[in-house]
Image (tube, rainbow, N blue to C red; front, side):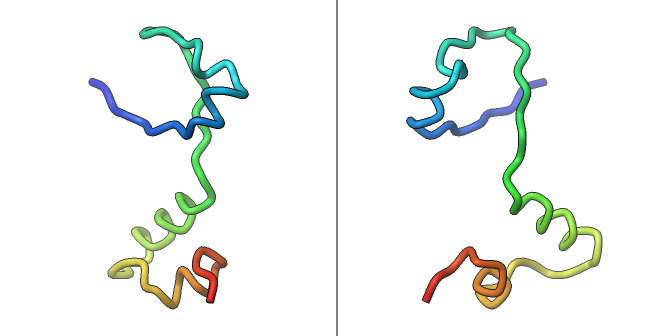
Length: 61
């Protein structure tokens, strides 16, 4: 099995991630939004709303 990740240019440039090879072991840490997604899925909520994103600082304005 496999999966894909997107890595921002800054991460490749300023970490060792850019030098990793296929098969190398890596430690992946998830963003804080993953915690919210987990809570939403466990509580039976129907999704992330604009209000939710704004309340938690993901939208400005």
